[in-house]
Length: 244
Image 1 (cartoon, rainbow, N blue to C red):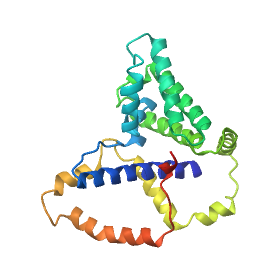
Image 2: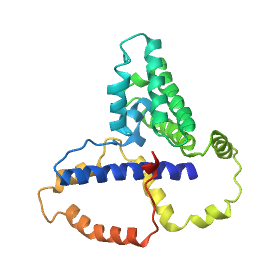
Image 3: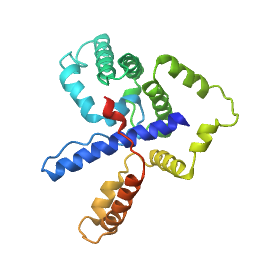
């Protein structure tokens, strides 16, 4: 449950403040690129890294991967380039850099495995449901390594996840599972199950963009002050990515 909650939290936290930056930039006349594209709908880890933190992935592709030779050389050289880039990507995150480096190497190894087995070249529609479920499971397990304070702590969490001890929840977790966080977790996980090509913002803009009194615009005007009140009434919660 903790791993699933962190999976939802880190995506909406990071994607949310990326959207805030895009919106603020638009107010000043700048158009920044999107940073996420339904990453939890990915059908492989290769697909995931095309959809998650896309600006960082493009930077490493353009300034590290391609100058190293990219995929123009032998299979072995291409695999080395992938591993090296994701080692740098993990280290770039800074905090607990040794743990991030382990995560980067693990991610690089998965991408190399998909390249060698041919998974990355399968059509997206091929066994899509099963591949989405398997990829999401790998992602959730990977966030444990990203979130843990040390490799040992990550090992303890993995051991608990696969212990199959279905006893009572610890009291601290039981007390935290009030209706509000459960609703947020449920909505966040439900969004993963939507069709991978469905982007609600585009649907809203395409259908009601021309009307100043469209349901979407009215909803924003109503929901915005309620959201501001909820944020002001809550405790301070810094963005997760401020530390990187």
